[in-house]
Structures are given as C-alpha cells and as structure tokens.
Length: 366
Length: 232
Image 1 (spheres, rainbow over the protein chains, first blue to last red):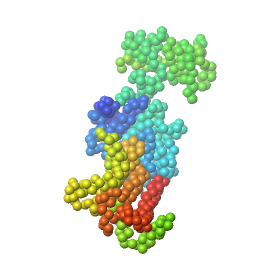
Image 2 (image 1 turned 180 degrees about the horizontal axis):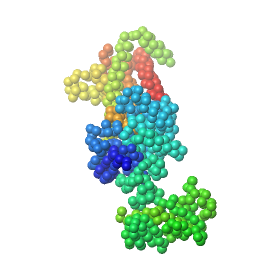
Image 3 (image 1 turned 60 degrees about the vertical axis):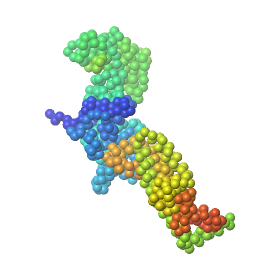
C-alpha cells in the first residue's frame, strides 16, 4: 500500500479582492508533493490571480497559505518562500542579455557560487534543449526557444513548486507539442511539484495527474483527470471538459445506482445516485457515442440505442464531429475511416448507442 | 567666414598652449555640470523609478509636473534659486549666492526633471509583468530595482546624456546665480556670453568650440557605451 500523499501546499479561506470586487475565493485547496495539477478555465477565471496569490506576488484580504505546514503569509517569510518556488508566465519575459545570463539570473539572485551557477545553467539548458543557444542574445530567440529559456530559468532554481501560467499559449502547434513533451519529461526527471494553467484540456491531460476547473475566481471542481472529464460537477465544467451533449430529463426509475430518465420521449439509462421525479442534466462524452447503420439486427448490447439523423458533419482535423438529432441534440466523434465505411452524410438516418456508464447525471442544485 | 576660421585657430591655440584661464574655466564647467548631473541622476532615477512602479492618488498630476519640469527655462530656475539664496531669502544664511555651489544647485534643478521624466518613461516602457517575474525569481526589492534599471539601461543612458547636455549648455541660471566672477564662477557658457557682448568674437568662438568639443566627447563616450549595451 502506497503511503498517503504529503501536502506541500494547503490553502484555507483565501480571499483576494481588486477594486472592492472578489477576484479569488478559495475555501480549501491542497497540493500533494510531486504531483502535477492542471487548472483549466475560461479567460478571467482567476487562474493567474491564483498563481500570483500562491507566489505571494499579491496580498490576499484574508486566508491561510501553508507551505509544508508553515504559514507563509507572514511578511518576513515572503522572500525565502518565493525562493522555494518558481513561476513561468505566458510571455517569456526574458532580460535583454544572453540566454546564459537569463537562465542564471535566479541563481545570481540567490548568490550561488559561480561554479554552481555554471553547472546548473548547463544542466537545465540541456534538459530544455537550449544548450547550444547559451551565448545567443535572448532577443534573437524564436518564441519556442524563448519559452524554453524561460522554463530553464525557472527549473534552474530547483524549485519545490513550479507554477506554469499558460506557458504554451503563444506557441505554434509543433513547438507547443514538443515543448509539452519535454516539460513532461523534465517534471518526471526532477520530481518537481507543478501547477499548470491552461485553456486546453488536451494539454492538461498530457501533463497532469489531477485536474481543477476554475471559474469566476472559484475552483469549481478538482479531481483525478478522468473523474473530472467523465463526471463533471456542473454544466460549466461539462462544457469546459468537452462534453457538448447535455440534456435535461426527469428520472423515471432509480435503483441500485442506476437510473432511467425520459428525454423527448426516449428512455435513457445512466449510472448515478438520483431520485425518482428529479430533473437532472445528463452528459454524454462525444467519444463514447457509437454510430452504426440503421439496419435490422444491428442493435448492440449497450443499454442506450437510439435512432437519429445526422444534422451536420464538421471536420476537426484527425476526426469528424457529428451533430445528431435523436429527439434531442447529441454530438459524436467518428474517424475518417468510419465515416467512409458507414457512408455517413448529412441527412442520413443512423443508429447511435452509448453505455449506461457513459451517461453522467448532474443534479440540479449541485 | 574669416571669423569662424580664426575662431577655430584661436580655439586650438588656446587648448594647445594650455592657457591657464581657459583651462580653469573648462575645468569648472565640467566640475559644476558633472557634479550637478551625478546628483540629478541619483535624484531623478530614484524619483522616476518610484513614480513608474507605484500608484498613488494624484499620480497623473505628478507625471504632468515632471513633464513640465523637463522644459523649465534656465532663467526662471536662475530667478528662483537667486531669490532663495538672496541675503534675505529662505536660504540666504548659507551665503551660497555667486558661488559655484549655487550654480550646481541651479543646474540640479534644471537637470533633475529631465532625468526624472526620461527615467519614468524608460521604466514604464518595460513589460508590466517583468517586475512580477523578477520578484517571482526570488529577488529582493533592491535586486528587482537593479535588474529593472539594467533592463532600461539604454534609455537611462539617454537620460544621462540629456541631463548633462541640458546643464553644460545652459547659461541663464549660471550667470544669474554664479555671477560670472573671473577665476571663481566663470564657466564656458558665461564666458562666451561675456566675450560676445564685448565684441571679442574670436575668443567667444574659441570658448564655444571648446564647449562643443567636450559635449561631443562626453556624448561620444556615452553613446559608445549605449551602443555596446544594445548589441550584447
């Protein structure tokens, strides 16, 4: 049995106001040592404010911020606490000097010996694949190289927690893709505890052990990635984790953790603790919907089988998104091969099916 | 044209012959303006940086006043410094009027708003989040200020050049508060005015050329530092 996770950062009742308005309100938050937590949320959700509060770069109105059990909101601890953290902003914010001096700046601030500075700069520059750029001016770097320098600068200080505020947002797709992979490797090699803010749930899933969804200064839901992705706490989280099919229904039957709702005259079975007569919102992830030809004998063993008509087929790069009408609107993904094999086209009638376990219930009032 | 050529010739002869009076005037000019520039840099960079990095009620008014101060007429500065240092003035007890110290004070008043204004603009031109990034790297407030100033070194060197240029070339305030006393408070600008008023154009030209030479020399050195900094 693995030992229980050790909390490196604990937040209680943290409140930040700006111009009299509440911009961050975190009743409780905990980060375990060595984990990577991804925070997703729309623009203005409070992700950057949350990071600034954690890094003690703004003062909360009230609250407790415990780093390894020590209250670090005490002003005399601010500098020493910040030196155990690192923060990477969306823009690289490099100094107008060489890459070497940029990577070294945090170490010089800490008055480390020259030899140690040289050792760490070389190590982390190599890890971030910028070892060959150390003598170059930071101004001559590409966007990807600049962000790698920014990351090397942060990792060189060997922080106990690294805060990454949308570090890939300004990069082109290929640079982003390789940098995410390199960052994942560096996080794995160094074992650094990390919080990554991102708009992109796929980025979050590639990097994180745990996922938190923020909105309007609140953490709306936290949990293991698959838990949040498949069991969103509310409609906002559902839409943010990519669930486009949300339909209300009245519970007809409920027993033993399963339920049946009636939606537009169709009976849908799902898994969850709900009460008979209750109106719930059902969520179905598009990748959990199976499309088949509407022919006799093609019914599957899954609990939910519905006739539907294809309203729209939208190319999404490596796959297609289908908008379907089955009495209510539902979204499904299909691969190009399936689209071709099933001869799917707009207006065609098909059969769609999804398991009861693919239906998640959001209880109104939750 | 003859006047210009003979003026140039006289300037070189005066410099090469190490004329004691000209050397003393040149040295006093550099000393007064150099010291005034250094003090105005300390005051102006500190004040400009403070205003750039803080918010407080009336900040816009302060910025407007700084910008107005950048165009302070030297004669107006001379007038007010004279009133303050006058025998019966608030600082008359110090007995500084018609001394090089009074000239330094007047030149500090002229140069400080120039340095403040340029420093303010220089610090404000840096990305807003750079300050947060430096603090996030664990910097103390002093380390952050040092790194920000290093980052704004190009415009800050421009502030040095503008401040020095503003005071070495001014004449109104120096003549009013220094008195242009021979061998004591006579500087290149005041001596040039005096020689011109006497119709001694050759000498005035020579002094003017020496003044231009030193302004060029100091700006050339500062420009070289600035451009070296730029290509690093």
